[in-house]
Every structure is written in C-alpha cells, then in structure tokens.
Amino acid sequence: MEIFGVVDTMFARYDMGGAALAELELCPGYGETFTVVRQTVPGFKDLAVAAKRLIEQQGAVIVVALGMPGSADVDKVCAHEASQGIMMAQLLTSTPILEVFVHEDEAEDPAVLASVFENRSRDHARNAYWMRFEPEQLVARAGQGIRQGFGHAGPLLASN
Image (cartoon, rainbow, N blue to C red; front, side):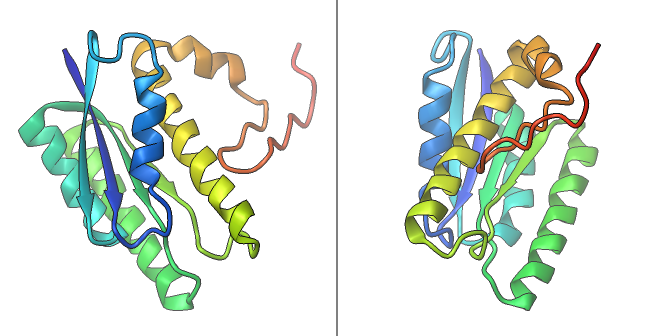
C-alpha cells in the first residue's frame, strides 16, 4: 500500500490538513491502494523538514504541504524561504511535495478566505492523487487556466 503525506500547520486559520485528508478519503483506492499519514507542525517554515521526514522515514510517495503565510511583508519573505525549503526537499528526495499556501490577505471577507482554504486544500489533494494514479486527468486539464482556490481563469486560446 502506498503512503501519501499530508503536512499542515497550527498557524493556519483553517484546518487545511483536514480538508486535504477529507478529499483523499473520497478518492478511489483509499484504504486499499493508498493511505495517508498526517503530521501537523507549528508553522509553514517547518513544512519542508516534516515532508522530507515523511518521505524518508514513513515511505510517503507524495506529500501535500499546507500552510498560511500572514499578511505582513516579513511573512511574505518567510513564505518565499519556506517555499525554497520545500523545493529543496523535493530535489533531495526525488519525491513530489505539493506546496499549498493560502496567504492571509488573499481575501478580506472571512467567508471568502475560508472558501479559498477549503478549495485549494482539496484541489491540491486531488492533484496529488491524480499525479500518482491518474496523470491523464492532469493532461486533460493542461492549458485550461485551472486554479486552486478561486474560480478558473480559463484558456487564452482554444486548443486544436
């Protein structure tokens, strides 16, 4: 049985890991072909090491790393550095780690922001499943301006 990793943070203002896990539980083969190991860390700067450890110690074949950078300039700088760490962990392990950040200032309305958290967390969890088991789902959506969190942007030109 394959292991998917879900790493989330206490700092986020929404249970992103819970949303990702709920989506993965809806995927075909959950509990038979794959299972999920979840770990929660304090903040998004801790995601890379936790994801790397899930890969190296638990045998995760793919990890969804979820966090919420705050709205201050220093939070945006820290988010960039955390992103660099996640990319480095991918390169060191040759394993996909899907970074899922929702910035606190993406929406002023708390209901809209909660919707972005929910949708982005679930959409990326589904992307992880497709990457592993149904890559043709991603190919079918290539060039379509698909977004995670907000409405889709749509394609610029019709494909032939």
